[in-house]
Image (cartoon, rainbow, N blue to C red; front, side, top):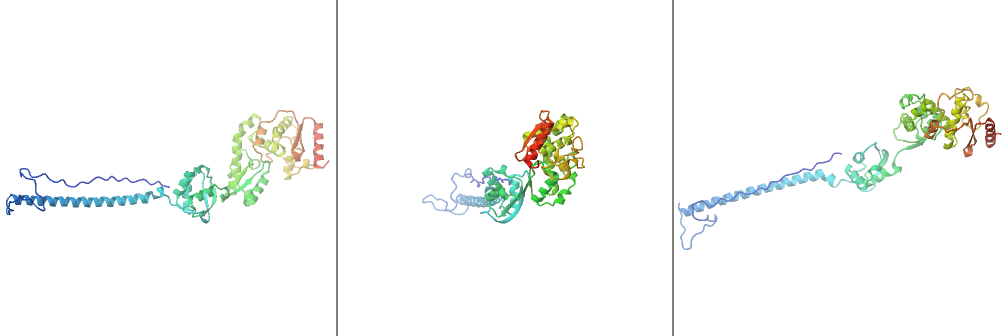
Length: 408
């Protein structure tokens, strides 16, 4: 929106002609032009005498005076016309700024407008005016400044009405219910396939489109073999026009922000892990953990077993290999042929098995101190996990779990 500048007009005062002084040496004040004076009792003479010359001179003075008055009158009239024209022009230019146009009432109908990130009140006002929501951009700017709420306006798509008073339009922009957005909450520990299914269900984006996204377009870190482990758990806002690439890219970017926050690369090196290995450990913690307080202890169990070259024997890995979810892991499950089966293969699985949150990432980078080699979530309903360095206690904890599950 452009600002209109003010126009300044300098008006000079215009004076009339000055009457000439009496003719030097005449010996008398010039008589009035309309009735020359005569001394009492002195007859009026005619011809070429001094009286005749004085009368002629008075006539000329009167003519000059009338001409000056006419010129002054014309100049005054011209100045008045100019001032009126300038004033009318200034009013036309400044009217939107002095008293901006505005509609009355709440408006009618429906129109969708998009407020882009970083928009000023003037830019938002222009968008609304172009859409016919408000009568003028300035009316919106004025009311938003008067109410000091510009900083509360958020980008996004809004369902508005045409012909709204600027104040009513501002109220609608501040109302969360008028924003057109679909919110997708991704819980911690979901697998990538589960995340995609959830996004499809809540946004209407086709599942096949989500599955078919080119992974090179979503901004994965160089060390990531795929999206598993990198779709960060959080709540996302999906707006009209957002694509499958947009949604997955937002999740990956959120992971990268969390990785920067925890110092993933540097801290992983400190515990002798690559960034991918650290994310993999975090995914195991997230899949197994009962409470946040358990996470660092689970990390320690993993590192203790890796240090002794002992198979991790983590139940969630064999379930991931079979794309199953259950609390009842059987001996048959532990024999499934898969590189993710940590009963059959030592070391970490080839990649993450879930999408960990920031607390699980922190636990992977900062394990608790302890000599535990086993842990069992003995009471899943109450999220109770017990840790031990004795195999006999581990066996007892497994029996406790089976009893709680009704499988003993």
